[in-house]
Length: 462
Image (cartoon, rainbow, N blue to C red; front, side, top):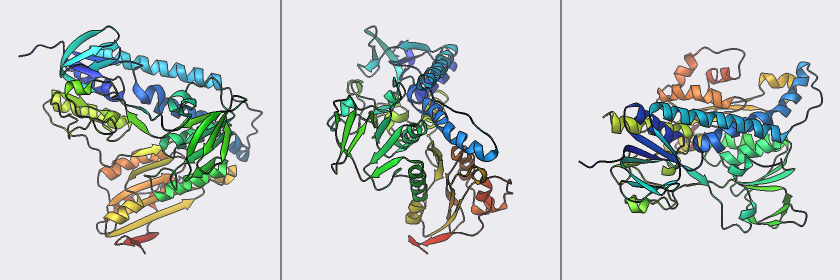
């Protein structure tokens, strides 16, 4: 029997890799985990967590405005970008420390180094030049922003990575993209007082979401003052004489801004990782194809999280890691369940969604019922805000099973997490109807929409 330095070697210290390494080590396995940057991965270091902190910061002007309708007189306010950055960095340092502590307490060896595969069981630690061996290997290196190298002047632009560390807040920014990251940062920068333009090649932002959510958010953002240019792309970015940036669009229009941010998707972080030397197959985009149990074509090498390009969400990577441990170390083959994954867009207002969109359901099922409510939330009645909430329930007309729920409005992310449990349990519209409302809340609309707003028959709206 071959002898290895480690039972398990994890390449990548993000959410998936840390969970796999920590739990395996707690089971008594000899584990090492290597990370070349910081532990916590994209989510903790330069993704979900700092982004949500920025979202909170950007919401205060709206809160100050709304307070007047409730009798509060808020004095002169000002915003200090360096204070936000410093406090954000302090929190990220704390969280990274917890990740390291969890690994150490479980008995895993934490290595601060880039790790590359040099053979089927061999890993080179770049910091020391040492090669170690492992019986099993997990690749969990995540992804990185697409630099869009075909764009002339792309090197003058920033990605979401750099947005968290800008020396000063720009007066004007142009953001390319129409997905989660682009939309969220457009709202963040606008909320912090930055003149913001969002440029997207598609007909409408958030291409994979329900149409009402997309159109409703677009209107809300435009009403706030965010300029949204759909069916438009940058053709080049140049420096101006006064050290600003000129972003030229495909129609010849020019935007003069302080920063241009590219949020044009993410790429698996597999470049020069040595996967070929280990015999691991890599896809066209650099992703690592895996089977139902997250195993690559090499039986002892697994891949988790964004690097597989399955579902790029932190909780999914953690779930895949737990399934890996169950399968490999607990003799309990467990396949990750990627069905009915709830998700939120932390825009302003938020989107929370789980299950099928109205459009997808209409294409798949012969009979579909759509229950839709659009209303002004109670908080807006005194604040004077014109912002609307939209709630939608998509139902299979033949068996009444709820196929999807979509919410646009404050705290939509919190609501959809609870709704995901119901949909995962296979609930029907009758279950919603039998549930007593909590009054007065916005969410009571979900259990008081008794008649469908409209139906689909064989894909046609009736």
